[in-house]
Length: 593
Image (cartoon, rainbow, N blue to C red):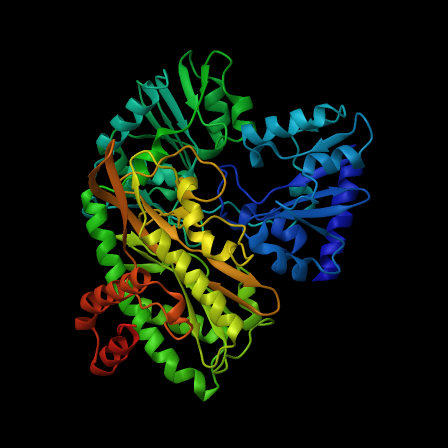
């Protein structure tokens, strides 16, 4: 594989030379700025061999580099070894930005090639401004990848299906009316929507074009005169065609989107610079009065209605039952010595498949044993798979897609004897998790203002993690969604009732262990307080937190009470669905400490 990567780089450099390009940039995304993409847009992975969900490759005639974040440092080092591609670790002070590297590597008046479909308007403008100082130009209309990727997968053509009101809880008409109201507040009559999860939510449709994410490749244009879905016609069944007609949604071919936008009559049109790709922006008719702003859909989608809240509670019960059955099985299976990271991954999915409304995993399960758990987004392969032993930690991050909700849970499980460092780190992570779980805060609070709660116990010991503590999660949609977040980086979106967010602090030590504890939390009202309303979090996830690694005396009385109360809730909501042995295991796993 390493030799193949080198050959692909050689082919790319030759094609760059043919086109007079001094550099070429390949991001991880698709024309919709998605985090997870269909195979057709997997060019960065194909070229580099790096399989993480986030990363950008830059190639010049003299160097090749991959920029990625801390979740993937260890993984990227292993996968890039001997390929000729250097790892650049983002967010570290010594790491130059892509633009800084290009300015130092290229001569004045150099040309950088990109595919304009793979860069948002915001990304393009930021890069253009940074390269301007060195008089470096950007060539955005290039099909260079098509020339060298001979076996490139076709565009996905899976059929779309209707997502029923019994799960969605709000009609298409009401959603479109709310979207129009949101656009009008930004002084726009029309809106162009590119994000796949936003389109799926707005139209109460789902698809199978992207692994783990029930979305479909499309664009949506909403104007005062019409609602137009740009989609491959082969994806529309007779049932969906009738559904679209009933909801006053017209259709046009996906590949015709730029042509249609170029011919649009004069109107005010809202586009989101961070979600609209540069090629689409370039295609929009000059007669349109473009308004740049945030799509109102993201916020509308993030606030669950009552039907969705009821549904996600039910999904959490079924997912909790599957997790408890799995953990009960795991405790007996590991000492027998026959289980590995891959085998337990398959076993967990088999338990989830027993639940009603299950439609698959919500992401590729992370099952990292021992040092593998320090690779934050580790993915076991037949080459890396290792046997589990009755000692140390197993980190298990997984989730399910149910018609009534999406789940995402991480448990770090003591398989046997632990050393003092493992116990201390586990206890610190748990303290941070509990601190955020117990937070009570005034209306208008941003996630960045709460993030420190989860990190403080770790910081006091000189430990940190460089990813966000919490991300939004979709409703039978993408496992990672916004607009809210809980992270060190500033995000102006405030936490609001009805939002579902993750709570997942961690500690990772290369070559030793990785620890993460993750529950999903729902923002709810906590009554009136000084100067207005106060909010708090309801923990939605229902699964025991392993107590074998806890240094109990390091927990405060309040922290122990939270954990005991949480475990009582888990037992009360799940025990009736279990058999006698499973119930006995759960009772022991949730006993008071």
